[in-house]
Structures are given as C-alpha cells and as structure tokens.
Image (tube, rainbow, N blue to C red; front, side, top):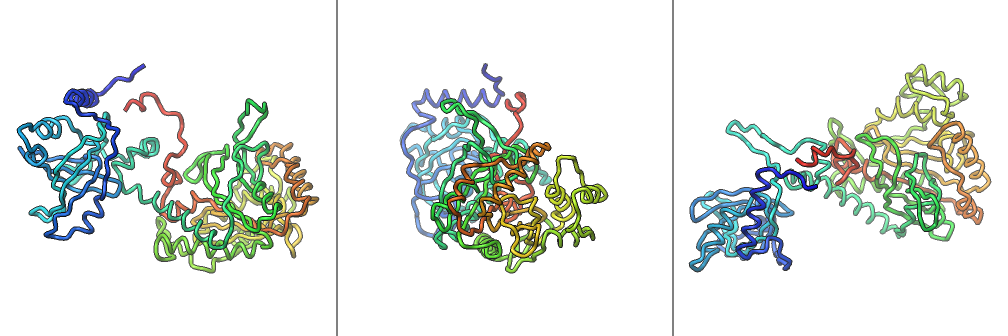
Length: 507
C-alpha cells in the first residue's frame, strides 16, 4: 500500500517527470569525475588564478536574480557558493538548462555536478562560476532545513533525538557538525589499531554465532540454524575464542568485535556494541594496566593534541599515571564501610542499608558489584583503575597471588562509567571447571547472567595456556568520552530503536 504524499512531494515528482520529458536522466549511471571539494577550494584559492574545478553536492540554498543566480552546494567536506549565469551554462539559443531546469525543476536537496572556475565575489566570498551543470540525483523528499527569522530565532531545526537517530542520513545532511564525532571515532580506532600493530600483535576474527555464549556475565540473543538444526547465540564477548588462539601458540591477538547483549537500553547501553579485546601471553594484569594507560593517553593526544579533554562539566586528564584503588578500598572510601570480611548474609543487609536493590538470586559477587555500581562508580570522574576483585565476581580471572578470595582483575572507570575490563587470565583448567560449576549453581538460583560451562574451552586450556593478560575495552564508551558526547546513541550511526510508529514513518 503506497503512502499518501505531501504537496511538496507531489510537486517534486512532477518535476522529476518533466526532467525525463526533457531528456534528462535524473539518476544517471555515468561516473561524475570530481577533482576537488569545498574545503580544498577555499583553502587553496590564489587570487588572480583561474582554477578549473569539478565538484558535486546537494543544492542547499538558491537566490534567483533574473538571468543570474547564486546558490550553495554541500559536499562531504562543507559548503561552497556557486554562481550560475544563464548564458554561461546555455551557450546557444536554447536556455532550457537555466530557465527551466535550474530555476523551476531543481529543488533543495537535489544532488548536482558542477564544472567551473573559482573566483571571489565583490563581497569577498570564494565561489565557483558554473560552466556546466549536471543533474545527478533528484530528491523526492524535502529536507527539514532550519529557518532563521529576522530576530535570529531558529525554526524547524532537526533536533528531535528520536528523529535524528532514526533518520541519521537526514541528520548528517542538515546537521553536518554531527559528522565530527564519527570522524573522531574512526581516528580513535585507527590510533588503537596503530598502537597494537606496532607491538606486533595480530588482528584476528572469531565467530559471532556461537554454540555457547561466554566470556562475560550477560543475557544473550538466541537464534536457530536450520541446516544444523541447533540453537546458536550471538556472542556476548569473544574472550574464550581468543584464548583458544593463545593456546594455539600466538603470543598476542586482538579483535575489534561487534558483541550483543540482550539487556536494558540507556544512554550508556546499546544491545549491539563494539569492543576491542586483546590477549598477550606471558603478561599479567599489572602489565596490562600500564599498556591501557599508554594506549589511551596516545589516543587522546592523536585526537586532541593534548591529554586534557572537556567532557560536559568535567575536565578529564588522561596523562599517566592514573589513580588506583582496590575494589574494597573504593567501597570503603565512598561508603565508609569495610565489606572485605562480610559473608553473603551480612553483605545483603549492608546493601539494603545503603539503599542498594537486592534479590535472592544475588550471590556475594553480585552484591559487591551492585554496591560498587551504586555508590562508587559514578563518583570516579578522572581515569581510575579499580583492582583486585572478589573471586565470586570474576569466573575467568586468576586468583590473586597474595590475597585469598581475590582475583587479579582491574576495570578502568572514567567519567563515572567502566571503559575497560582486564585480568590475569585463569589458565588452571581444574580451577576453571570449578568456577564454571559455581556459575551453573548461580544460574539455578535465577541469575540469568551466569556463565555456561564450555567443555571445548576447558579442553583447550587442558592442553596448556601460557600465563596471559587479557583486556576488553568498550569502543562506544571511550568514543563518548573522547567526543564529549552525552549519549551512546551520539557515537553510533544507527543505534537500536523501538519499532517506528507508522504515522511517524510517513513524515
């Protein structure tokens, strides 16, 4: 069933038909060989030189003044003014290209190609004098362009978050500054990849569809493979596969991975997210802390030229060294309570007194995690390492070399949220099996984030996995900080959205 068209859409379709009747293909197949862009033209213009350029972009404004007009086109880099003279683009008697095509059949949002020369107007604006004009794409929907009245008030700005996230393609056109966050995000991953490659770690790929989900505490997305007639899960982490590669003899492997967790959504959570996981043989968590400091400091310098970044109201400094607390120290620091010797019952009562929500499915590890999350995490603004987690919280981490009941694990917290998680990896297969079995018991109690027992992974480490340090760093969260973005949706081109209301989709 076709949707009802607006008046403007009807007019645009009529213009489309008239172009076709004039013998102009509004969607030509031929290559349009651009040789410049708006920014380069403005940057490299030399007064007095007649530089020929070929550019393309969207028509964003137009001022028609009889047989000559000024317009503005927007390409991937920015905007530039063009000057269209009737007799320049229509050399013979036939003035159709100007009088009909340019003046009447083109609309704001149409994509056009321009061949012309660069010049400066009387008011000093670098512009392109058009010699040839080509229609490259006819736009059938009007862009939601903001308008500024005589008082300077902006009307019809495309600022509604839901519309912006749902129609990112429009957002990028009418709010071109939005691109900056995504350009920085790509620079961030390039910087990280460059850092790891220089250390000669191997970038690899591991399965997204897995017969067992593991490597994190999270609920998975489940699907069914018809040919194999078996259930599969979208990975919640790629840890267990990367550690299999360490068993296989690689000294250092990393992966930029899309992971999926069937959990709540917020400005810090999207069900589909990106993380970088790294595993290096013969290293430990202390070594990994130093690497994280070095890598993130480098990223800040590559993106901003300095280690200090303004994020909302907070000035965050990534310069090494970062502050370090143990998990118990952090809880004692922010609550005044030492929970290190508490059993599960006492800790449950303590959590309740602190106003932390608890339920009967929570074991000691989950309780500690909830207390830390509620009372400590949000107060850690400067990059801080939280170390030495209770064993109950970390089924894949090696037991602490000095302190009973703890594991060699750290998280980096910044601007009130975790940005990475790392361990001295557990490589004792007997201990690992026992930890998995404890997770199964938590699952029976109702913990839907408890890990499954992965026999193949146990088989792998029974062959012998060398001492290994592992790291998972959230690219989306780090991108939020490095771009001073308030929501994870601002650093994802296409964040997950609820089903679109049909009436809204017609707009």
